[in-house]
Length: 154
View 1 (cartoon, rainbow, N blue to C red):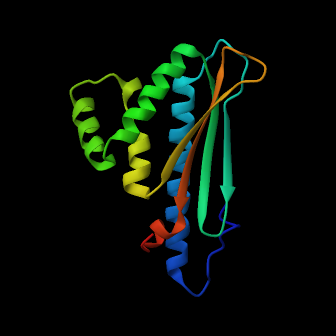
View 2 (cartoon, one colour):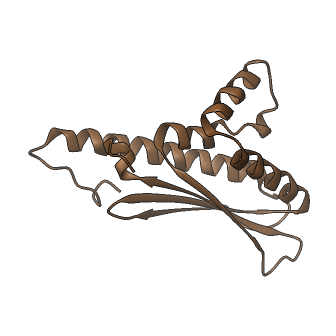
């Protein structure tokens, strides 16, 4: 990824930016993969996938996984709950709940951190799986605008 966004040998700030991008993308990829594994239907032979898309102004990290009906309802409720809330307020609430022993599979700290700390824009797509009618494929995408890491307004 860093070879796509090369450092400027004259400007030391580009090396700092590269490190921030590496850290943000690594964090986002790990969190998306963890979330995909949390909601994945392990009874069906559908792979969990991760995709990295590089552009001059953004990096998009996406994960895909298969979910059954029960997971779909839980996951859809989880997504709706996240989208209805103010990310910063929900982050504080989630930190407080986790401090008193909240159920970890309801936590959205990683996703909220992507939004609040890195300025990522999250999106979800639910589609019927062509080979398994009882399974849905979920694609979770995090778009990381590089301007947010550069300190530019969006």
